[in-house]
Image 1 (tube, one colour):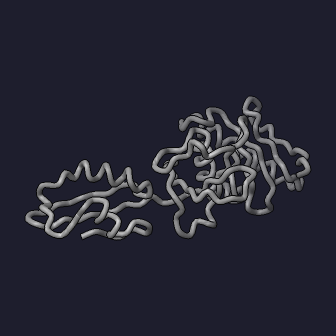
Image 2 (cartoon, rainbow, N blue to C red):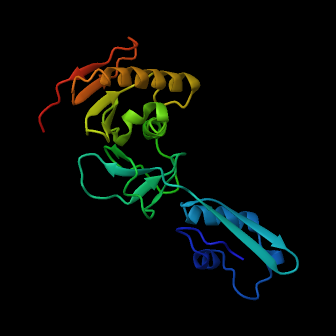
Image 3 (cartoon, rainbow, N blue to C red):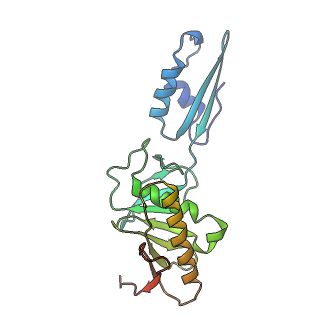
Length: 219
């Protein structure tokens, strides 16, 4: 008995694990089978094999849930890559067009089945935080990490943008999270002043609350 996933169907698992009719289920190495199956299908977060004597095997698939799409900054071509909230990369998933996008300089080191690099993980933490009701006004279309010193956010509401940086950006730590929340709070307060700015700068981590509008360069 194999439970279908959204992307991975039972036929794929049957073939990948060589689960043919008449096979002796008692002799299979399920630990090795699990390891090889997870390596073969990056979309899988986990797979469990439950053998019950004499001839019953239950296979349960747990697929990864895509959180972001991954694209190359400045290009219109679709990479077909997505990542979950833990930063694990896998190939195109159905109905992902509405997901926020992480734009990066290159995807040369973005490998299905592997976790994203620290700066991309910072963008994931940022985008996840912007789902919080407290920051609903900052809901983002994409986060561009192609620059070294900041992440460039494009907002859903009016397509305005903000450069943002915080202490320990590339480290998933309580201090880094607290710094990010402070920057977002100050950014939200500045944007609520209603200056109509199209580009905000929230990159000064040495002076808390120093958020200012920039003149957006011409395309």
